[in-house]
Amino acid sequence: MKKKIVAIYGSPRKDGNTAQLMDRFLQGVHQNRYVQGTDIDRIMVAEKKISPCRGCRSCTKTGECIIDDPMQQIYTQLLDADFIAVATPIFFTTVSGYLKALIDRCQRLWSLKYEHKKKIVTKERSGILLSCAGSGNPKIFDCARMVMRSFFDVLYVGYDGDYVFNQVDEKKDIEKKTGALESVFDFGRSRHFANLLP
Ligand SMILES: Cc1cc2nc3c(=O)[nH]c(=O)nc-3n(C[C@H](O)[C@H](O)[C@H](O)COP(=O)(O)O)c2cc1C
Image 1 (cartoon, rainbow, N blue to C red):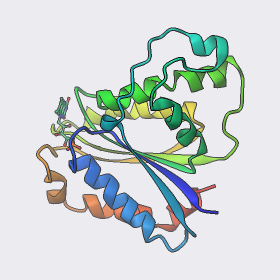
Image 2 (image 1 turned 90 degrees about the vertical axis):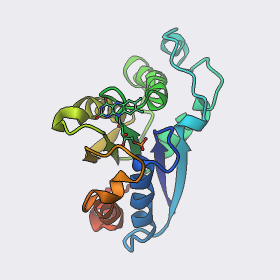
Image 3 (image 1 turned 60 degrees about the vertical axis):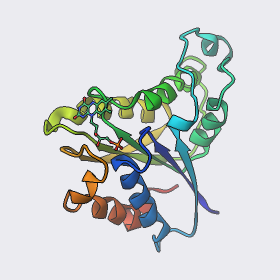
């Protein structure tokens, strides 16, 4: 059966640095000779109009989110995924607001897991973070990493690691970063990636 890869594009900038990283990773996946076939679900968060979490705690009572928006379909995509790749620029030391809205709405899944004690995912799966930041501060990705770990934890997704690049600011700067695009391509094409799939 084909493996489902969910690719979350977190930047509002079309064809920006993080989108280039994701595209190159997916090209690697496409060429991976150890994987039989893949279905790739691309989620462009800036096009989705995902409402922020209202903190109403309805999910605590019912296990459902009362907000009727694209997140209802995204829950299913996240739960069905065999691998989740998240690409985000660093905005004010963390993930983009668009992506944070999606993550906060996973409070419903947190509630199912920890309050309702429901096993919402049965397969072992993994995920990665791809990110770029303008500054040269090596700690600039720390906060995004923590956010991503808690997002993946709720989804029963193992954090396989990240590919993060700083001093990448203008569009296409990532192309000037030696080895950056190659590294994500090589990961997508690797046996290691294939072994991560359930
Ligand atoms: C609203 C906004 C906030 C940003 N905040 C930071 C920041 O806190 N630290 C940093 O290093 N870069 C920051 N940047 C720079 C972006 O992380 C950088 O330009 C990145 O390459 C953009 O990726 P993209 O092309 O995928 O959107 C910010 C950019 C914007 C537009």
